[in-house]
Length: 421
Figure 1 (cartoon, rainbow, N blue to C red):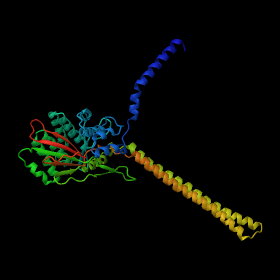
Figure 2 (figure 1 turned 30 degrees about the vertical axis):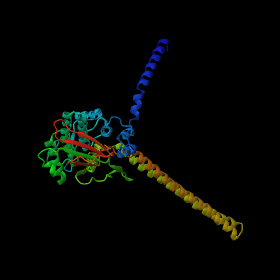
Figure 3 (figure 1 turned 180 degrees about the vertical axis):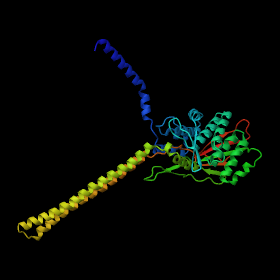
Figure 4 (figure 1 turned 120 degrees about the horizontal axis):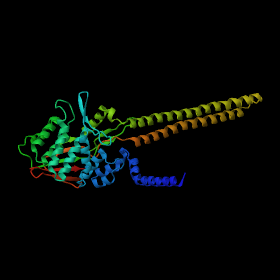
């Protein structure tokens, strides 16, 4: 190689090295982006449940960056922490608006869905909450017209997207949430539409006084009780069950949000070919099959040792008796020693074989449980309330609550939105 070629090669390598140094942080960032496991949320959820949204944000798990779920979760936590920045939330709104929503039917039930930028397919309630939460952020920033747009979008996904005669997702908890937003925006007629729909869905007669009002109420309070359902995992099942561990509010108009998560599971089943993570299922069944094979090997090896012990013990006894007989010895004590030696060897090997089989089984069970614990994840928007309640008058505020009060300039109703931890 001549000197000119050598110089060119050296210069090229230097440029490559410089480029690699520049790109390294980005490459590391891409490599470290991973799905958040259920157990990763433990500390952040605990902080939120004890009334500390600021600490919940500090302890929020890293891994998924700017995805639909984490953007929604952080926006919900941050709202109660005094944050007014809704940029990440608007990014999700804009992206989903640019995508086409798909409607499918399953056993006369209709579902809608669309894929987020990172590949997650939000549940129907999550799409609606996206617009309800965005409306609250616009009210937080006193952008009343923009808040109305988001409220109309939430209503669209609750009702207008489908033929009214088609069975589809609707929910009284979301309806009273939307009604409260309309009330704060000064649109009492729109609020009553949602209140009537909540009544049709639930037959809750406590709604009737509000539905029959000719004039908007002076005050309303919408309370969010609790923080996220709990996930209960059952050994041998690939997906969890949801449980609501927040006490039911006393009296008034209140609804559980449990139906959101049951619908999420049902939706995932209905479009399992799209939603189901084949990689996850392959990992899950790989753990199960691998554990079974390793246990079988342990039992086989243990059984072989136990069988060998029996054979060896018998051989010692038979061989010893044969040798004594060949030598013409008829000593009962000697024969007793031979029997004892055979028994000791056989019993020892039987014990060791049994221990190997049981130790292998225990170790495999422990490793399997650890693998499954690491794999356990069900992606959905956490931190949302377990109950939503609507009251005609503001309630006493305690330190274990966070409150947002909204009232558009032309609205006759002041609405308190209360997070009760």
